[in-house]
Length: 331
Picture (cartoon, rainbow, N blue to C red):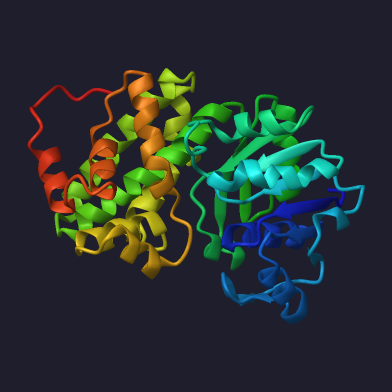
């Protein structure tokens, strides 16, 4: 494998973790973030103390304060900024000679309901786009624990190109062409994780959580198929794999949000306690709009939206779900 220079945009926990994977794979990594305090701290201390305080940052990760300082030979960008900031963040890239972008965020653009690849197409001409997703907590990736993810692109040569720079024995990459399905799965699973947190926070138990994950997968699949995704995608790493992870482990910020809402905290109180981006909170309304537009029934998502918009309490939302009329199980 030939060493390549790569720019990682976003020095939060996920962007830094991906930069670490690339650095351990012997690539020269340039790391940029709009938050200069984070960048300067990494540069001076070789630690990202805000997001990954236990992990030493290796010398082949070079934090840069100005994105214009990215060397001209950098042609690949990994974008790990939150979905709501993706469009504005792309403006910083327009001065660079970009050939391909790999999006590592999970969600939809606020107000437009656009998937990430559409946002990139709007903002950057003649740029190949890949999507990185799957069951992957940043802390575990940063620590070098075994992880498997999916990289999808319309042109599998592009997904293979990004796979080549990321893939290791401990960070296994599977390539796919269903870039729409991978994005839908990554967006909606965050909403399902909020629901799982609510269910567990109310003490509903393991049976209820298992049912919620299963029916949540059915909702994700219905929406994805209506948008042209492939059924198999939702049984893979980016679908079922990521759904199980975020619904069952308290490292998930979305699940923790649900747990806090079940305790009776307000959205603002829960956000303050979690202290980091909660993508499902930003995505839920957009998912609802997409479901209506595509005439898809998504009852779990609907009840999560009711809770986070204060239309009902967590307990009332759970009661609304269990009191639904009986029906055949279907997808």
